[in-house]
Each structure stands twice: as structure tokens, then as C-alpha cells.
Length: 136
Image (cartoon, rainbow, N blue to C red; front, side, top):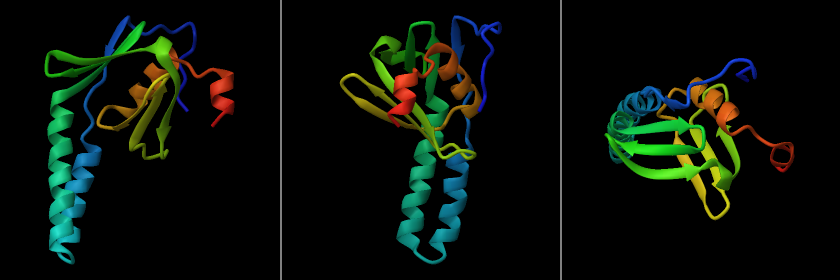
């Protein structure tokens, strides 16, 4: 688990770097799958290409009060930390899914961003409370 000491401060704004590992693995797997099941391999490959495009276009920005989602240079969604109940990164040591729950909704995002910096930002800007951690 990566932790940020309280003496170490992150900037007021952090934009996560893209991470193409999941799309590349999916595209590579689709080639192998296609040798046995063409249509399944094609579907996995198309999903890998879709995630590659999303990785290039979508950006996550952590600020002191919100998580912002950008498509290119346009902000498409803002998630204030005050409305978050919990967050989790699934399947360590190969993180593939980021989950967070707001008061009125649940969100799942594939890890198409730097997973270590994602965890660092989450722990810094929106640390888990003891009650949220014990409810998992």
C-alpha cells in the first residue's frame, strides 16, 4: 500500500497520467482468443481498442475538494469528496478497477490511469475513514 506522509504535500491539482496496460493486454488477448473463437476475440479486441481511445481522451484530475473527469480539455463530471462514502481499487497487485460510492450513486472505472498515483491521490485527498474501512 502506498501512503503519503502527512508532511509530504501533493499539489492542489493533480492530473493522472494515462496507463495503457489494460487496453494492451485486452488487444493481445483478443488475438489469442480469436484463434479459438473468432467472434469472442473480435469483441475483446474491439473493447481493447475502445479502452485505448478512452485512455487517450479521458483525464482524471484531483483537486483539494473534487475529482474532476475531463474529455479532452472539457470537464464532463465533477465528484465532490464531501459526497463520497467509500472508495476501493480492486485486484492488487494488478489493479484493474476503481470503485467509489457517493451518497446517491456508485461508480466503476477501469484503471486506465497510473494506479500508484491514483491510490496516492485517493489516500491524500479523500482518505478512508475508519468506519468506511470496517464496513467492507
